[in-house]
Image (cartoon, rainbow, N blue to C red; front, side):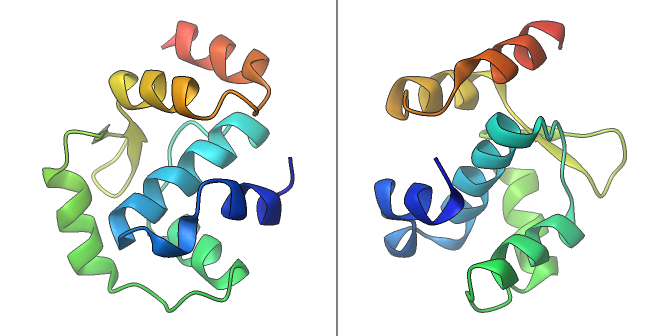
Length: 107
């Protein structure tokens, strides 16, 4: 599934800013093996989809206070929480599970 099809299948444009980050992170986690992300990746995702650039400071605070994300390898990086990944695997089974399962089990 390409990014445009994914955006349509999850109705990404109707989601809140933090939910967009969660779903886009999951897409790149599944498709490219991205295990953690930070502000540069988020900006790139939003730019790629022609979405308004998020206020990174505000978004970072929302991510840090969200139970759906955990701290990454540095203070500016974050990862999807295992429970978030599990719920997204159940919600969006159409993405190939092989790579995500390997990465999830390795954590």
